[in-house]
Length: 131
Length: 457
Image 1 (cartoon, chains in turn red, brown):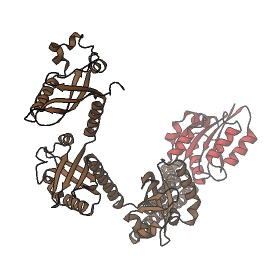
Image 2: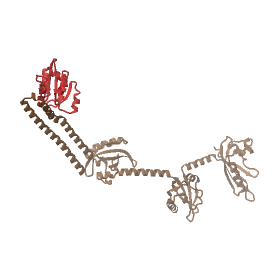
Image 3: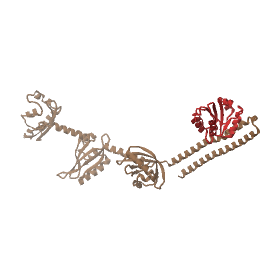
Image 4: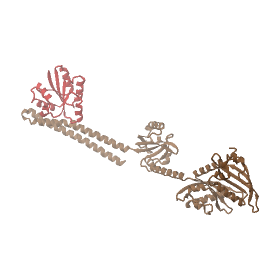
Protein backbone atom coordinates (compact mmCIF):
# COMPACT_ATOMS: atom_id res chain seq x y z
CA UNK A 1 0.00 0.00 0.00
CA UNK A 2 1.34 3.42 -1.02
CA UNK A 3 0.60 6.48 1.10
CA UNK A 4 0.72 9.83 -0.65
CA UNK A 5 0.52 13.25 1.04
CA UNK A 6 -0.53 16.18 -1.20
CA UNK A 7 -0.79 19.91 -0.46
CA UNK A 8 -3.39 22.00 -2.28
CA UNK A 9 -3.05 25.78 -1.74
CA UNK A 10 -2.89 28.78 -4.06
CA UNK A 11 -0.61 30.78 -1.72
CA UNK A 12 3.10 30.20 -2.56
CA UNK A 13 4.21 31.66 0.78
CA UNK A 14 2.09 29.06 2.61
CA UNK A 15 3.48 26.28 0.43
CA UNK A 16 7.01 27.54 1.15
CA UNK A 17 6.31 27.61 4.91
CA UNK A 18 4.83 24.09 4.83
CA UNK A 19 7.85 22.73 2.95
CA UNK A 20 10.13 24.17 5.59
CA UNK A 21 7.99 22.60 8.33
CA UNK A 22 7.64 19.17 6.69
CA UNK A 23 11.40 19.03 6.06
CA UNK A 24 11.72 18.40 9.82
CA UNK A 25 9.76 15.16 9.40
CA UNK A 26 10.69 13.79 5.98
CA UNK A 27 13.40 14.07 3.40
CA UNK A 28 10.95 13.62 0.57
CA UNK A 29 9.40 16.67 -1.06
CA UNK A 30 5.64 16.85 -0.48
CA UNK A 31 3.78 17.29 -3.75
CA UNK A 32 2.03 20.68 -4.08
CA UNK A 33 -0.86 21.89 -6.26
CA UNK A 34 -2.01 25.49 -6.84
CA UNK A 35 -5.66 24.53 -7.06
CA UNK A 36 -8.10 21.64 -6.66
CA UNK A 37 -8.39 21.00 -10.39
CA UNK A 38 -4.66 20.25 -10.76
CA UNK A 39 -4.72 18.00 -7.68
CA UNK A 40 -7.79 16.13 -8.94
CA UNK A 41 -6.19 15.57 -12.35
CA UNK A 42 -3.09 14.19 -10.62
CA UNK A 43 -5.10 11.83 -8.39
CA UNK A 44 -7.17 10.53 -11.30
CA UNK A 45 -4.01 9.93 -13.32
CA UNK A 46 -2.27 8.11 -10.47
CA UNK A 47 -5.13 6.38 -8.72
CA UNK A 48 -5.12 2.68 -7.94
CA UNK A 49 -6.44 0.20 -5.40
CA UNK A 50 -3.10 0.17 -3.57
CA UNK A 51 -2.80 3.96 -3.17
CA UNK A 52 -4.27 5.96 -0.31
CA UNK A 53 -4.08 9.74 -0.19
CA UNK A 54 -3.98 12.38 2.53
CA UNK A 55 -4.67 15.91 1.34
CA UNK A 56 -3.90 19.17 3.10
CA UNK A 57 -6.63 21.25 1.52
CA UNK A 58 -7.17 25.01 1.51
CA UNK A 59 -10.73 26.35 1.07
CA UNK A 60 -10.47 29.69 -0.72
CA UNK A 61 -8.78 28.96 -4.03
CA UNK A 62 -9.26 29.94 -7.66
CA UNK A 63 -10.60 27.57 -10.41
CA UNK A 64 -12.35 25.22 -7.97
CA UNK A 65 -12.41 25.99 -4.25
CA UNK A 66 -11.93 23.46 -1.44
CA UNK A 67 -15.63 22.62 -1.09
CA UNK A 68 -16.12 22.13 -4.83
CA UNK A 69 -13.08 19.85 -4.78
CA UNK A 70 -14.57 17.84 -1.88
CA UNK A 71 -17.88 17.44 -3.74
CA UNK A 72 -16.03 16.35 -6.86
CA UNK A 73 -14.10 13.55 -5.12
CA UNK A 74 -17.32 12.40 -3.44
CA UNK A 75 -19.07 12.31 -6.81
CA UNK A 76 -16.19 10.28 -8.25
CA UNK A 77 -16.39 7.84 -5.31
CA UNK A 78 -12.84 8.66 -4.27
CA UNK A 79 -13.72 9.80 -0.79
CA UNK A 80 -13.08 6.36 0.75
CA UNK A 81 -9.44 6.30 -0.29
CA UNK A 82 -8.75 9.99 0.43
CA UNK A 83 -8.43 11.47 3.93
CA UNK A 84 -8.55 15.27 4.11
CA UNK A 85 -7.18 17.81 6.57
CA UNK A 86 -8.69 21.24 5.94
CA UNK A 87 -6.04 23.88 6.37
CA UNK A 88 -7.55 27.35 6.11
CA UNK A 89 -6.93 30.91 7.12
CA UNK A 90 -10.72 31.36 7.53
CA UNK A 91 -12.07 32.17 11.00
CA UNK A 92 -15.60 31.54 9.78
CA UNK A 93 -17.50 29.04 11.93
CA UNK A 94 -19.67 28.21 8.95
CA UNK A 95 -16.63 26.57 7.31
CA UNK A 96 -15.99 24.46 10.43
CA UNK A 97 -19.65 23.35 10.47
CA UNK A 98 -19.56 22.52 6.80
CA UNK A 99 -16.42 20.40 7.24
CA UNK A 100 -18.39 18.16 9.63
CA UNK A 101 -20.73 17.15 6.83
CA UNK A 102 -17.89 15.27 5.02
CA UNK A 103 -16.96 11.91 6.54
CA UNK A 104 -13.44 11.87 5.07
CA UNK A 105 -12.41 15.23 6.57
CA UNK A 106 -10.37 14.09 9.56
CA UNK A 107 -9.22 17.49 10.85
CA UNK A 108 -9.98 21.18 10.51
CA UNK A 109 -6.92 23.36 11.20
CA UNK A 110 -6.56 27.13 11.13
CA UNK A 111 -3.39 28.43 9.50
CA UNK A 112 -0.55 28.97 10.16
CA UNK A 113 0.49 25.33 10.49
CA UNK A 114 2.96 24.75 13.30
CA UNK A 115 4.87 21.76 14.62
CA UNK A 116 2.49 21.61 17.60
CA UNK A 117 -0.48 21.32 15.28
CA UNK A 118 1.20 18.65 13.12
CA UNK A 119 2.05 16.55 16.15
CA UNK A 120 -1.55 16.52 17.30
CA UNK A 121 -2.55 14.59 14.16
CA UNK A 122 -1.14 11.02 14.30
CA UNK A 123 -2.44 10.16 10.83
CA UNK A 124 -0.52 13.10 9.33
CA UNK A 125 2.65 12.03 11.16
CA UNK A 126 2.14 8.53 9.79
CA UNK A 127 1.82 9.81 6.22
CA UNK A 128 4.94 12.04 6.68
CA UNK A 129 6.88 8.97 7.82
CA UNK A 130 5.75 6.95 4.86
CA UNK A 131 6.69 9.53 2.21
CA UNK B 1 -121.89 29.47 27.32
CA UNK B 2 -125.13 30.73 25.82
CA UNK B 3 -127.01 29.62 28.92
CA UNK B 4 -124.42 31.16 31.19
CA UNK B 5 -124.72 34.59 29.57
CA UNK B 6 -128.47 34.48 29.73
CA UNK B 7 -130.35 37.07 31.72
CA UNK B 8 -132.76 35.79 34.33
CA UNK B 9 -135.44 37.99 35.78
CA UNK B 10 -136.11 38.55 39.42
CA UNK B 11 -138.64 40.40 41.39
CA UNK B 12 -138.29 41.74 44.86
CA UNK B 13 -140.68 43.09 47.37
CA UNK B 14 -140.70 43.19 51.14
CA UNK B 15 -142.33 39.77 51.45
CA UNK B 16 -140.41 38.01 48.72
CA UNK B 17 -136.63 38.62 48.83
CA UNK B 18 -133.87 37.39 46.51
CA UNK B 19 -133.25 34.11 44.66
CA UNK B 20 -136.61 33.04 43.56
CA UNK B 21 -135.67 32.11 40.03
CA UNK B 22 -135.34 28.35 40.22
CA UNK B 23 -134.22 28.08 36.61
CA UNK B 24 -131.35 30.44 37.31
CA UNK B 25 -130.38 28.57 40.48
CA UNK B 26 -130.37 25.30 38.60
CA UNK B 27 -128.85 26.32 35.27
CA UNK B 28 -126.36 28.93 36.37
CA UNK B 29 -125.41 27.76 39.83
CA UNK B 30 -126.00 24.04 39.42
CA UNK B 31 -128.22 23.58 42.53
CA UNK B 32 -131.59 21.91 42.53
CA UNK B 33 -133.32 24.21 45.01
CA UNK B 34 -134.87 23.95 47.43
CA UNK B 35 -134.05 20.23 47.84
CA UNK B 36 -130.30 20.82 47.83
CA UNK B 37 -129.12 20.84 51.43
CA UNK B 38 -126.20 23.17 50.74
CA UNK B 39 -128.70 25.77 49.58
CA UNK B 40 -130.57 25.96 52.85
CA UNK B 41 -130.83 29.23 54.74
CA UNK B 42 -128.14 28.19 57.22
CA UNK B 43 -125.58 27.37 54.58
CA UNK B 44 -126.54 30.08 52.12
CA UNK B 45 -124.04 32.65 53.45
CA UNK B 46 -121.23 30.13 53.13
CA UNK B 47 -121.77 29.96 49.37
CA UNK B 48 -120.54 33.54 48.93
CA UNK B 49 -116.91 34.43 48.38
CA UNK B 50 -115.47 35.60 51.75
CA UNK B 51 -116.53 39.18 52.30
CA UNK B 52 -118.84 39.40 49.29
CA UNK B 53 -122.02 38.50 51.26
CA UNK B 54 -121.41 41.33 53.73
CA UNK B 55 -120.77 43.78 50.89
CA UNK B 56 -123.96 42.68 49.15
CA UNK B 57 -125.98 43.05 52.35
CA UNK B 58 -124.50 46.45 52.96
CA UNK B 59 -125.25 47.78 49.50
CA UNK B 60 -128.71 46.21 49.59
CA UNK B 61 -129.40 47.94 52.85
CA UNK B 62 -128.09 51.23 51.47
CA UNK B 63 -130.30 50.81 48.43
CA UNK B 64 -133.38 50.14 50.52
CA UNK B 65 -132.74 53.15 52.74
CA UNK B 66 -131.64 55.39 49.91
CA UNK B 67 -133.50 57.15 47.15
CA UNK B 68 -131.67 55.66 44.16
CA UNK B 69 -134.01 53.88 41.77
CA UNK B 70 -131.41 51.70 40.13
CA UNK B 71 -129.44 48.92 41.69
CA UNK B 72 -126.34 47.13 40.45
CA UNK B 73 -124.03 44.83 42.34
CA UNK B 74 -121.53 42.09 41.47
CA UNK B 75 -120.37 39.33 43.78
CA UNK B 76 -118.80 35.90 43.68
CA UNK B 77 -120.89 32.82 44.37
CA UNK B 78 -119.89 29.18 44.67
CA UNK B 79 -121.13 26.89 41.88
CA UNK B 80 -122.26 23.38 42.78
CA UNK B 81 -118.99 22.14 41.20
CA UNK B 82 -116.98 24.25 43.70
CA UNK B 83 -115.79 26.97 41.29
CA UNK B 84 -116.42 30.69 41.92
CA UNK B 85 -118.77 32.49 39.56
CA UNK B 86 -119.19 36.22 39.16
CA UNK B 87 -122.84 37.19 39.39
CA UNK B 88 -124.25 40.58 38.47
CA UNK B 89 -127.58 41.74 39.73
CA UNK B 90 -129.14 44.89 38.40
CA UNK B 91 -132.61 46.27 38.82
CA UNK B 92 -134.90 49.18 39.08
CA UNK B 93 -137.28 50.06 41.91
CA UNK B 94 -140.96 50.17 40.99
CA UNK B 95 -142.53 50.65 44.44
CA UNK B 96 -141.65 53.30 46.98
CA UNK B 97 -142.61 54.19 50.53
CA UNK B 98 -143.63 57.78 51.45
CA UNK B 99 -139.96 58.65 52.09
CA UNK B 100 -139.26 57.66 48.50
CA UNK B 101 -137.24 54.60 49.59
CA UNK B 102 -137.65 51.62 47.27
CA UNK B 103 -139.80 48.83 48.67
CA UNK B 104 -140.08 46.75 45.54
CA UNK B 105 -138.01 46.25 42.44
CA UNK B 106 -137.61 44.15 39.36
CA UNK B 107 -134.43 43.32 37.56
CA UNK B 108 -132.11 40.77 36.03
CA UNK B 109 -129.48 38.43 37.33
CA UNK B 110 -126.67 37.27 35.11
CA UNK B 111 -123.42 35.35 35.29
CA UNK B 112 -120.51 37.64 34.23
CA UNK B 113 -117.49 35.42 35.09
CA UNK B 114 -116.00 35.60 31.57
CA UNK B 115 -116.44 39.33 31.34
CA UNK B 116 -114.81 39.83 34.75
CA UNK B 117 -111.90 37.59 33.76
CA UNK B 118 -111.38 39.62 30.60
CA UNK B 119 -111.45 42.87 32.53
CA UNK B 120 -108.95 41.58 35.07
CA UNK B 121 -106.71 40.43 32.24
CA UNK B 122 -106.97 43.81 30.53
CA UNK B 123 -106.16 45.54 33.79
CA UNK B 124 -103.08 43.39 34.30
CA UNK B 125 -101.96 44.13 30.72
CA UNK B 126 -102.43 47.84 31.29
CA UNK B 127 -100.47 47.53 34.51
CA UNK B 128 -97.58 45.74 32.86
CA UNK B 129 -97.37 48.14 29.93
CA UNK B 130 -97.45 51.05 32.35
CA UNK B 131 -100.11 53.17 30.77
CA UNK B 132 -101.82 56.06 32.50
CA UNK B 133 -105.01 57.39 31.11
CA UNK B 134 -105.42 61.02 32.05
CA UNK B 135 -108.50 62.99 31.13
CA UNK B 136 -108.14 66.75 31.31
CA UNK B 137 -111.12 69.00 31.00
CA UNK B 138 -111.07 72.61 30.03
CA UNK B 139 -113.95 74.67 31.31
CA UNK B 140 -115.43 77.78 29.71
CA UNK B 141 -112.80 79.92 31.48
CA UNK B 142 -110.05 77.89 29.86
CA UNK B 143 -109.05 76.32 33.20
CA UNK B 144 -107.78 72.76 32.99
CA UNK B 145 -108.74 70.18 35.57
CA UNK B 146 -108.04 66.49 35.95
CA UNK B 147 -111.29 64.67 35.37
CA UNK B 148 -109.98 61.15 35.46
CA UNK B 149 -106.69 59.41 36.05
CA UNK B 150 -106.14 55.64 36.07
CA UNK B 151 -105.14 54.77 39.55
CA UNK B 152 -103.48 51.35 39.07
CA UNK B 153 -100.85 52.72 36.75
CA UNK B 154 -100.17 55.60 39.08
CA UNK B 155 -99.66 53.16 41.93
CA UNK B 156 -97.31 51.26 39.71
CA UNK B 157 -95.30 54.41 39.09
CA UNK B 158 -95.47 55.49 42.72
CA UNK B 159 -96.74 58.94 41.92
CA UNK B 160 -98.91 60.47 44.62
CA UNK B 161 -102.33 60.43 43.05
CA UNK B 162 -105.01 60.54 45.68
CA UNK B 163 -104.92 64.30 45.90
CA UNK B 164 -104.30 64.71 42.20
CA UNK B 165 -107.93 64.83 41.20
CA UNK B 166 -108.69 67.61 43.69
CA UNK B 167 -105.44 69.43 43.19
CA UNK B 168 -105.72 72.57 41.13
CA UNK B 169 -102.01 72.47 40.46
CA UNK B 170 -102.09 68.82 39.46
CA UNK B 171 -99.19 69.18 37.01
CA UNK B 172 -96.89 69.87 39.92
CA UNK B 173 -97.29 66.22 40.96
CA UNK B 174 -97.27 64.89 37.46
CA UNK B 175 -94.11 66.44 36.09
CA UNK B 176 -90.65 67.62 37.02
CA UNK B 177 -90.66 71.36 37.72
CA UNK B 178 -88.21 72.00 34.89
CA UNK B 179 -90.61 70.35 32.41
CA UNK B 180 -93.80 72.07 33.59
CA UNK B 181 -93.45 75.00 31.19
CA UNK B 182 -93.05 72.67 28.25
CA UNK B 183 -96.14 70.61 29.15
CA UNK B 184 -98.26 73.72 29.74
CA UNK B 185 -97.26 75.14 26.37
CA UNK B 186 -98.03 71.86 24.63
CA UNK B 187 -101.40 71.58 26.41
CA UNK B 188 -102.36 75.17 25.65
CA UNK B 189 -101.43 74.69 22.02
CA UNK B 190 -103.41 71.49 21.78
CA UNK B 191 -106.56 72.96 23.37
CA UNK B 192 -106.43 76.31 21.59
CA UNK B 193 -105.81 74.86 18.13
CA UNK B 194 -107.57 71.53 18.80
CA UNK B 195 -104.40 69.81 17.66
CA UNK B 196 -102.85 66.47 18.55
CA UNK B 197 -101.01 66.61 21.85
CA UNK B 198 -97.58 65.03 22.18
CA UNK B 199 -95.01 65.70 24.85
CA UNK B 200 -92.19 63.98 26.72
CA UNK B 201 -91.40 64.94 30.28
CA UNK B 202 -89.92 63.72 33.52
CA UNK B 203 -91.75 62.67 36.65
CA UNK B 204 -90.13 62.46 40.07
CA UNK B 205 -91.46 59.40 41.84
CA UNK B 206 -92.00 59.15 45.59
CA UNK B 207 -88.63 57.42 45.82
CA UNK B 208 -87.08 60.44 44.07
CA UNK B 209 -86.48 58.43 40.92
CA UNK B 210 -86.76 60.10 37.55
CA UNK B 211 -89.36 58.51 35.30
CA UNK B 212 -89.54 59.59 31.67
CA UNK B 213 -93.08 59.85 30.31
CA UNK B 214 -94.54 60.29 26.91
CA UNK B 215 -98.09 61.54 26.58
CA UNK B 216 -100.23 61.59 23.45
CA UNK B 217 -103.86 62.46 22.87
CA UNK B 218 -106.38 64.32 20.73
CA UNK B 219 -108.61 67.06 22.21
CA UNK B 220 -112.35 66.60 21.77
CA UNK B 221 -115.02 69.28 22.02
CA UNK B 222 -118.08 68.36 24.05
CA UNK B 223 -121.68 69.35 23.25
CA UNK B 224 -121.66 71.97 25.97
CA UNK B 225 -118.63 73.70 24.42
CA UNK B 226 -116.11 72.38 26.96
CA UNK B 227 -113.04 70.50 25.73
CA UNK B 228 -111.45 67.41 27.10
CA UNK B 229 -108.26 65.61 26.25
CA UNK B 230 -107.63 61.92 26.93
CA UNK B 231 -103.88 61.60 27.25
CA UNK B 232 -102.30 58.15 27.07
CA UNK B 233 -99.12 58.35 29.11
CA UNK B 234 -96.45 55.68 28.77
CA UNK B 235 -93.28 55.08 30.72
CA UNK B 236 -90.35 55.54 28.32
CA UNK B 237 -87.62 55.57 30.99
CA UNK B 238 -85.92 52.41 29.66
CA UNK B 239 -86.17 53.66 26.11
CA UNK B 240 -84.65 57.00 27.13
CA UNK B 241 -81.90 55.20 29.01
CA UNK B 242 -81.04 53.03 25.98
CA UNK B 243 -81.16 56.06 23.69
CA UNK B 244 -78.89 57.92 26.08
CA UNK B 245 -76.46 54.97 26.31
CA UNK B 246 -76.50 54.64 22.54
CA UNK B 247 -75.82 58.34 22.19
CA UNK B 248 -72.89 58.15 24.63
CA UNK B 249 -71.48 55.11 22.83
CA UNK B 250 -71.88 56.80 19.44
CA UNK B 251 -70.20 59.94 20.75
CA UNK B 252 -67.35 57.83 22.15
CA UNK B 253 -66.90 56.06 18.81
CA UNK B 254 -67.13 59.35 16.92
CA UNK B 255 -64.53 60.94 19.17
CA UNK B 256 -62.17 57.94 18.86
CA UNK B 257 -62.63 57.98 15.10
CA UNK B 258 -62.26 61.75 14.67
CA UNK B 259 -59.35 62.24 17.04
CA UNK B 260 -57.36 59.20 16.03
CA UNK B 261 -53.88 60.31 14.96
CA UNK B 262 -54.02 57.70 12.18
CA UNK B 263 -55.97 58.41 8.99
CA UNK B 264 -59.24 56.51 9.12
CA UNK B 265 -62.40 56.32 6.98
CA UNK B 266 -65.56 54.37 6.36
CA UNK B 267 -66.47 53.32 2.82
CA UNK B 268 -69.39 51.64 1.14
CA UNK B 269 -68.37 48.16 0.09
CA UNK B 270 -70.63 48.21 -2.99
CA UNK B 271 -69.88 51.65 -4.43
CA UNK B 272 -66.44 52.12 -2.75
CA UNK B 273 -67.58 55.67 -1.92
CA UNK B 274 -66.21 57.38 1.18
CA UNK B 275 -68.94 57.80 3.80
CA UNK B 276 -66.87 59.38 6.57
CA UNK B 277 -63.25 60.44 7.01
CA UNK B 278 -61.41 61.65 10.07
CA UNK B 279 -59.26 64.78 10.36
CA UNK B 280 -55.99 62.81 10.16
CA UNK B 281 -57.06 61.47 6.73
CA UNK B 282 -58.01 64.98 5.57
CA UNK B 283 -54.58 66.23 6.63
CA UNK B 284 -52.63 63.30 5.17
CA UNK B 285 -54.32 63.05 1.77
CA UNK B 286 -54.92 66.79 1.27
CA UNK B 287 -58.60 66.53 0.30
CA UNK B 288 -61.32 68.40 2.20
CA UNK B 289 -64.13 66.38 3.79
CA UNK B 290 -66.54 67.51 1.06
CA UNK B 291 -64.09 66.40 -1.62
CA UNK B 292 -63.70 63.03 0.08
CA UNK B 293 -67.48 62.60 0.17
CA UNK B 294 -67.54 62.78 -3.62
CA UNK B 295 -64.64 60.32 -4.05
CA UNK B 296 -64.13 56.56 -4.05
CA UNK B 297 -61.26 54.37 -2.90
CA UNK B 298 -59.85 54.39 -6.44
CA UNK B 299 -59.11 58.12 -6.09
CA UNK B 300 -56.45 57.55 -3.43
CA UNK B 301 -54.73 54.67 -5.22
CA UNK B 302 -52.08 55.17 -7.91
CA UNK B 303 -52.91 53.82 -11.38
CA UNK B 304 -50.59 50.82 -10.99
CA UNK B 305 -52.55 49.62 -7.92
CA UNK B 306 -56.03 49.46 -9.53
CA UNK B 307 -55.93 45.76 -10.29
CA UNK B 308 -54.79 45.03 -6.77
CA UNK B 309 -57.62 47.16 -5.36
CA UNK B 310 -60.28 45.39 -7.45
CA UNK B 311 -58.95 42.00 -6.37
CA UNK B 312 -58.96 42.93 -2.68
CA UNK B 313 -62.46 44.48 -2.83
CA UNK B 314 -63.80 41.36 -4.54
CA UNK B 315 -62.30 39.22 -1.80
CA UNK B 316 -63.85 41.41 0.92
CA UNK B 317 -67.27 41.35 -0.78
CA UNK B 318 -67.13 37.56 -0.74
CA UNK B 319 -66.33 37.53 2.96
CA UNK B 320 -67.73 40.70 4.48
CA UNK B 321 -66.78 39.81 8.08
CA UNK B 322 -63.17 39.20 7.15
CA UNK B 323 -60.57 41.26 9.02
CA UNK B 324 -57.41 41.90 7.09
CA UNK B 325 -54.33 44.06 6.97
CA UNK B 326 -51.64 44.58 4.40
CA UNK B 327 -49.29 46.98 2.65
CA UNK B 328 -50.69 49.15 -0.14
CA UNK B 329 -49.60 52.17 -2.16
CA UNK B 330 -51.72 55.31 -1.74
CA UNK B 331 -51.57 58.67 -3.46
CA UNK B 332 -52.27 62.15 -2.04
CA UNK B 333 -54.01 65.03 -3.79
CA UNK B 334 -50.56 66.40 -4.67
CA UNK B 335 -49.62 63.10 -6.31
CA UNK B 336 -47.24 61.93 -3.62
CA UNK B 337 -47.18 58.13 -3.46
CA UNK B 338 -46.51 56.46 -0.14
CA UNK B 339 -46.81 53.01 1.42
CA UNK B 340 -49.47 52.36 4.04
CA UNK B 341 -50.10 49.51 6.42
CA UNK B 342 -53.86 49.23 6.16
CA UNK B 343 -56.24 47.60 8.63
CA UNK B 344 -59.75 46.82 7.36
CA UNK B 345 -62.73 45.74 9.48
CA UNK B 346 -66.50 45.40 8.90
CA UNK B 347 -68.84 48.08 10.25
CA UNK B 348 -72.55 48.76 9.89
CA UNK B 349 -72.85 52.43 9.06
CA UNK B 350 -76.30 54.05 8.68
CA UNK B 351 -77.69 50.55 8.24
CA UNK B 352 -75.36 49.71 5.34
CA UNK B 353 -72.64 47.06 5.19
CA UNK B 354 -69.47 49.10 5.17
CA UNK B 355 -65.79 48.77 6.02
CA UNK B 356 -63.72 50.87 8.36
CA UNK B 357 -60.10 51.49 7.42
CA UNK B 358 -57.10 52.65 9.40
CA UNK B 359 -54.15 53.53 7.16
CA UNK B 360 -50.73 54.03 8.72
CA UNK B 361 -48.04 55.67 6.61
CA UNK B 362 -45.04 53.35 6.83
CA UNK B 363 -42.85 55.06 4.22
CA UNK B 364 -40.42 56.29 6.88
CA UNK B 365 -40.46 52.94 8.61
CA UNK B 366 -39.64 51.33 5.28
CA UNK B 367 -36.76 53.82 4.81
CA UNK B 368 -35.36 52.85 8.19
CA UNK B 369 -35.81 49.17 7.43
CA UNK B 370 -33.99 49.57 4.13
CA UNK B 371 -31.23 51.46 5.89
CA UNK B 372 -30.86 48.79 8.58
CA UNK B 373 -30.85 46.09 5.91
CA UNK B 374 -28.01 47.92 4.09
CA UNK B 375 -26.13 48.32 7.34
CA UNK B 376 -26.50 44.60 8.02
CA UNK B 377 -25.18 43.85 4.54
CA UNK B 378 -22.12 46.04 5.23
CA UNK B 379 -21.50 44.36 8.57
CA UNK B 380 -21.76 40.94 6.94
CA UNK B 381 -19.31 42.01 4.25
CA UNK B 382 -16.84 43.34 6.85
CA UNK B 383 -17.18 40.10 8.82
CA UNK B 384 -16.47 38.04 5.73
CA UNK B 385 -13.48 40.21 4.78
CA UNK B 386 -12.04 39.89 8.27
CA UNK B 387 -12.45 36.15 8.54
CA UNK B 388 -11.31 35.33 4.99
CA UNK B 389 -9.38 38.09 3.23
CA UNK B 390 -7.66 39.85 6.14
CA UNK B 391 -6.65 36.59 7.75
CA UNK B 392 -4.78 35.40 4.63
CA UNK B 393 -1.85 37.90 4.93
CA UNK B 394 -2.09 37.67 8.72
CA UNK B 395 -1.51 33.88 8.82
CA UNK B 396 1.24 34.31 6.29
CA UNK B 397 2.92 36.84 8.59
CA UNK B 398 2.48 34.57 11.59
CA UNK B 399 3.97 31.61 9.69
CA UNK B 400 6.93 33.67 8.44
CA UNK B 401 7.66 35.05 11.92
CA UNK B 402 7.47 31.52 13.37
CA UNK B 403 10.00 30.42 10.75
CA UNK B 404 12.39 33.23 11.70
CA UNK B 405 12.81 31.58 15.11
CA UNK B 406 14.42 28.61 13.35
CA UNK B 407 17.62 30.39 12.16
CA UNK B 408 19.60 27.25 11.40
CA UNK B 409 17.36 25.96 8.65
CA UNK B 410 17.18 29.25 6.71
CA UNK B 411 19.69 30.02 3.98
CA UNK B 412 20.39 33.57 2.82
CA UNK B 413 18.20 33.28 -0.23
CA UNK B 414 15.30 32.09 1.90
CA UNK B 415 15.86 34.93 4.36
CA UNK B 416 15.48 37.47 1.54
CA UNK B 417 12.29 35.73 0.45
CA UNK B 418 10.96 35.78 4.01
CA UNK B 419 11.73 39.50 4.44
CA UNK B 420 10.12 40.35 1.10
CA UNK B 421 6.98 38.34 1.95
CA UNK B 422 6.73 39.89 5.41
CA UNK B 423 6.62 43.34 3.77
CA UNK B 424 4.14 42.13 1.09
CA UNK B 425 1.82 40.63 3.70
CA UNK B 426 1.98 43.76 5.85
CA UNK B 427 1.13 45.92 2.81
CA UNK B 428 -1.70 43.59 1.88
CA UNK B 429 -3.09 43.90 5.40
CA UNK B 430 -2.78 47.67 5.17
CA UNK B 431 -4.88 47.72 1.99
CA UNK B 432 -7.46 45.37 3.53
CA UNK B 433 -7.91 47.42 6.68
CA UNK B 434 -8.29 50.56 4.58
CA UNK B 435 -10.97 48.82 2.50
CA UNK B 436 -12.83 47.84 5.66
CA UNK B 437 -12.58 51.42 6.96
CA UNK B 438 -14.03 52.65 3.65
CA UNK B 439 -17.03 50.39 3.96
CA UNK B 440 -17.64 51.65 7.51
CA UNK B 441 -17.29 55.28 6.39
CA UNK B 442 -19.69 54.76 3.47
CA UNK B 443 -22.29 53.23 5.77
CA UNK B 444 -21.99 56.12 8.22
CA UNK B 445 -22.34 58.62 5.38
CA UNK B 446 -25.51 56.90 4.17
CA UNK B 447 -26.85 57.02 7.72
CA UNK B 448 -26.21 60.78 7.93
CA UNK B 449 -27.91 61.34 4.56
CA UNK B 450 -30.87 59.28 5.70
CA UNK B 451 -31.17 61.29 8.93
CA UNK B 452 -30.96 64.57 6.98
CA UNK B 453 -33.67 63.32 4.59
CA UNK B 454 -35.97 62.37 7.49
CA UNK B 455 -35.42 65.78 9.11
CA UNK B 456 -36.11 67.47 5.74
CA UNK B 457 -39.30 65.41 5.30
